[in-house]
Length: 255
Image (cartoon, rainbow, N blue to C red):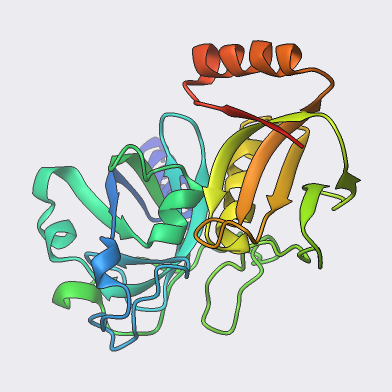
């Protein structure tokens, strides 16, 4: 009777575990080279570096996964639309290739590659990547309420309404800033990349972020500042601290 009771306990424990188990893996993430932008993926979809997509070694096309940096917890949800042969082989622990936009979300561009945890959010209904199949299913506790998906299935980037005229604005309220000094921490050719930089800095705890629009600089009309500071000296003190604490090089500009 005791043996039967133990066996039943083990059975129910295993059943309970299987209901809550979630498919995941840990390994290295890298990202696509820019030269692949506009090229066809293995699914037939054209790779767009601005979409939140990825290549995987076994999950079916259309799957949504969460990729989380192990070192700092930064994460991004991406859709599998391509197959990664080196991921399928497990070369040097390689598990996923991210689009450039996704890599920017977790500040992977500078590092090149980093250790991540991959979690399945939604199991796709497309072909399994690299001819492999996985024993996985959409987690029972996944509601989808935390993910705003575009028609393509990618997590939509937050959008802001760009100001009409030139000038410097508070990044959140788009309130004009007409005087003072700012510490420039980025210059971009389009508003979307400037917004992504602002988002990255906000995730790191930075506040008082500004967006500057200057059409006299056609290659990089959108600049991201921290400020404003009342004096150049106070801006310089902050710039020195920024470099020492965060290894971010800033440039002081009068607003």
